[in-house]
Length: 536
Ligand code: N01
Image (cartoon, rainbow, N blue to C red; front, side, top):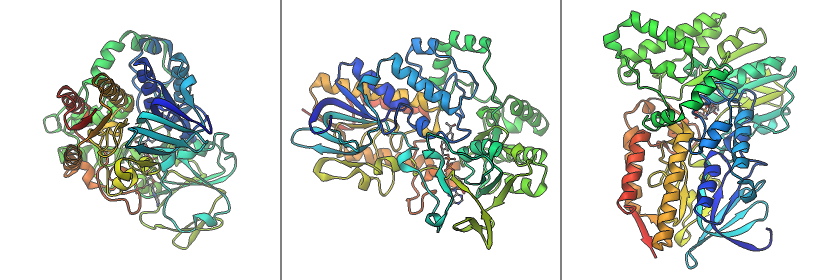
């Protein structure tokens, strides 16, 4: 394509869950589309996050597309919580099953999208030399992406003579860890998944922990033929339930009230739920996040579990979750995380009590002690939600830069559209609930809403469709109001942008729940796309 400007109706950026479905929907609507993807194949976050132990925290039977009955019946998950290679295979399967590959360009990272006001078209360029033009651009770039990995601001990283890796950009050819002295910085969802698997081959493993997470056992297991058959037979009911749930999960709401239940029965219920595993462990009581007595009970239950698993009391004391209420940071799932610290070659260092001073040629220095290492794994997360947009040069009407608009915090109307950027739509953009939910269900909502909005513009002859500044302001203010006084307000987290030095403390996600979000987006559409300026 190099050298000439090919014309499209829509450019889709990214081939993860969102880009795959968006391309399918728009092509079904008869639009000429091209999708650009930086990776060598489909997968998105599941292409880049191929670190050891990468696995989904949602159960496979509902961490998938619901829109295609054929795909639901033809694809079979092997495990309760699918590992990265299987999710990548699934996304390749869907791509081929829907014959999408012919409209996808891989190894092409979009570097800029510039709006031509006179022509009412977007000019898009990639690092592979593509130059194309389209009437619409849809970003399907996710909020936790390879373009926005967050490196720790520790002096001396460039001095390290060994291998320095970020989990979100793990080499496709793999990394030889056998017998190596490995250091892992970061104990969020990613570090917790990586540590047990790295420990299987590393000669020595040191985990540098700043904040201990609340962690529940995944109790992952292969899915039996009977389980698979039951899911496949019940998908209509499963999706109806998931779509009616504020988190997009096909779960019943928690039934118990802590004060009415009492501590003895509460322990029994938590023990049962601990054995069952999965993210539901914490959802036994409906008031766990609102009644401090209920929250403290489960926090203590978790700490007891750590002490009962980790044999070294000093290590257990470091690993016990503390310092913030449960739910104020994302809860993680583990497979043998705590057990790993019983291995003689695995150690944990509390870098909250004694911060990392610097990285030296040979390893990590804490106070005046140097930990010699061959490999440092940075499991330090992402410049979430706004970072991926800021990494691209997106220029709207009047030369307005999206990166600059997002400098002071997240902005978008309905978490999907930006004032001053006509016909630019974002799946799971800033101020969107997706990353606080079961993501594929949120993504399907956004894709369908965007596809309908584009169909509306096409039918009505609308050539420039963008939010009014006031509508965007209201949405942004509403997003911040919901977070104020919420549990998230009581800790530092990526959701608040506080993991990235200098990033303003503004909440990045819309916390009103998926059901309410669906309703608000539907109301906007039904009112003739209220809050959008529409010119012909
Ligand atoms: O990143 P994080 P993540 N010195 O930001 C620590 C999704 N996900 O990649 O808490 C020392 O949560 C930091 O410490 P602290 C999921 O949405 C999904 O783990 O800031 N430590 C923290 O421990 C998740 O929430 C799945 O004190 C430093 C860690 O690094 C999101 O991705 C699987 C440091 C970063 O934790 C991000 O998770 C995995 C420093 N200078 C991830 N800087 C699924 O199941 C940072 N840290 C789908």
